Length: 373
Ligand SMILES: [Zn+2]
Ligand SMILES: [Zn+2]
Ligand SMILES: [Zn+2]
Image (cartoon, rainbow, N blue to C red; front, side):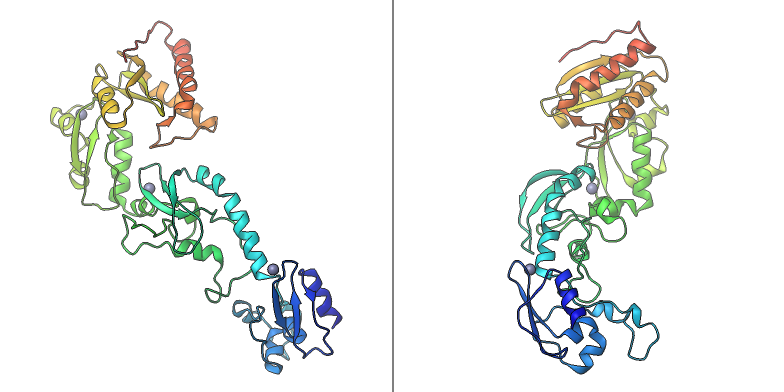
């Protein structure tokens, strides 16, 4: 009885009725006034206890998940059985919920999501419509899925936790576009760090991964949001500024994704560095020729109408080098893109220009830049 009293106290319970023996039903209450009923014997030894007394109605301590670890009477490792009385599950749930809500803002930043609007969720939790860096929009609960849950939850069966529930309920019935109200977390290890199911699905398809890799390698801007299907055609703007479109399968069959460059049979050498911006975003980039095709595309596709830097006729390799320098420095300073991998919040315009200007001053002091907006 004293072991029971101590354990109940440690877990934040107050014993409301005075038990006369270990088989009596006892009412416990937490500081918030939630109550539960237990019998001391079952609270301390659920397996043994439940063979002696029936679990009280509405009791919260019989945990199926833990049962298999418990020693049977007569077994030698009796020390191994856990105490089955737990802290108040309502209060633990509330604490978890508060912690998960509080760290959602940090989670969104670390998972590179942009919050678009408030949304409604079927489970009553707050939710947000968000967009990943690759342009996929979906709804997630406005809670950090990495928040550990301390108490196993009986509502969803043995072995489930709130965290599992938060993630797995978000499985899309149709992979790809997520209907309203279906959550966008991918399931499985690491899914909390990769919350977009479409990106997750793309990462599982070698052809799509390869297509994305080649687009990056060839400095091709994809103008359409890629779906997770291999049968799709995307519009693109190549490094020379040609606007074309290509299907995944055809793109993978030829060396260059751009149809015009492909016909010409030559890979354009990037010799242009530019920085374009508007009130919301800034984008550094590279091109070839006079760079006009790329700048026009940025203006029409993304509203990036201000040309803050345009440096042409660079020696071979310089455009790549300055681009790498700027992107590496931004990453090193913790500045994350808001779209794709090279579109940053307009708040960083000065930083982007400074980094490029610094690189030119140090490496190509005789080059001048022009601005025409
Ligand atoms: Zn409580
Ligand atoms: Zn995505
Ligand atoms: Zn081209």
